[in-house]
Each structure stands twice: as C-alpha cells, then as structure tokens.
Image (cartoon, rainbow, N blue to C red; front, top):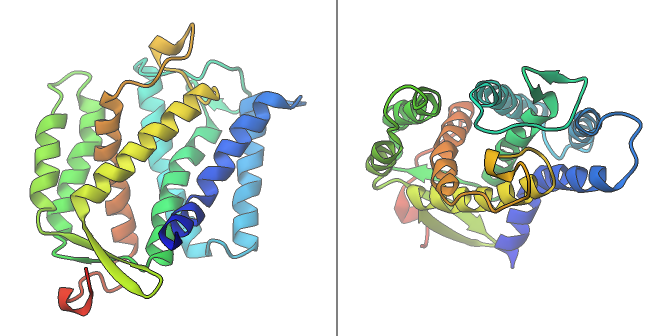
Length: 252
C-alpha cells in the first residue's frame, strides 16, 4: 500500500499531463489545443516549484529531460515516425513545444522516486552504463540509415547492469531489485501510458491516422531501453550523492 502511494506520488507530474490531455479534449479552448497544453504545463511546473513539490535543482534536472526529449521529437517527426496532427502556433519542425513536458514527466518520476523511496545503488558501473545508454540514444537516430542494434543493445544493458541492485525504502523496510528489472517494469508502464496518450490525441503513429489502435508491443522494448538514458541522466545529476552502499545494511 505504501509502495503504491509512493509510486502514485512520484507520478504526480505525469498525472497532471494526462489530466491536461483529457480536459483539453472536452473543454472549449480559446487557443489551439497544443498551445493551451504548453501554457497549462508551464503553469503546472511553476506550481510544483512554488509548493516545493520539486526543488529548483530538481527542476533543472527535469529541464534536461525536456531538452533531450525535444531533440528526439524533432528528429523522429521529420523522419515520419509519428505526427502531431493538430495545428498550433507553438510548433517547431512539426513538433509542439508542449511535447517536451512528456519527457519531463518521465524525468520527474525518476527524480521524485529517488527522493521518496530513498533509492541507492550497489554494483553500479557508472562509465559502462553511461556508454551503453549513449549508444541506445544514438541508435534511435541511426537505425533509420544503419542496422537497428536494439537487440544487441538490450543484451549490452543486461551485461553492464548484471549484479547492479536498486535499494528502496517502503515504510521502515528496505528492499532491493535488479536494476535491469526496474528498467523493464518502468518501460512496460511507459508503454501503457503511451497507449493512453495516443488515445487522448497527444500524437499519432502512422497506423493510428484513421482510427486509434493499440501501440505496437515492440514499443515496450524501446521504452525499456530509453529508460536507461533517463536513469543515467539522473545518476549524473546525483553524482555528488552516495550511490554505493553495503548490501549488508539492508534486508531484501
């Protein structure tokens, strides 16, 4: 129960994103929907900071996700991977600026989970994991011209995280989970979230142009890989914090 509450609270920003997507479909808006979503999500970010739900340092980290996500979106939309079908004044290269907040929501989840569950790592290979995560990110660009290395990179992620454990606190009890399993679980829930987002018209894949269909299950694997990039960014931000603890200090 406590774990579920912590996870729900970690998803607070993401919940606001979904609320905005849903309400903007139902309410009459004086400006284009995507523009209204941008204004709304900027306001949500300001409220989170004002209420100290996220610190200034955390917001800077989440801004990094926003920038990384926008670069990703600009490229993918130009390549025809998906589209934002609705008009907007705040579109750049076919990408509405609000879309960066969807990546920021992922960043917010990871950052807030780290704080709320007191996450710590053992056996984490910082350099090797960062190199593989960078390769994962680059492959999402290069696979349009070069062989897609997602399967090989999945094996690489498993290899560099083998023996890496994530420790987290629920109530007064300390638990642990393999880091690779955490990536898979987060990737699965992101795939579910993507289905909801496309249903709410956040964007469309080519096969959703005429009628909504479930997002391909292959995207689940893509999200699990992309989570490694998010995680490495947060670890880099947390580099001044103690990331390695003795496993004997916890109960599994």
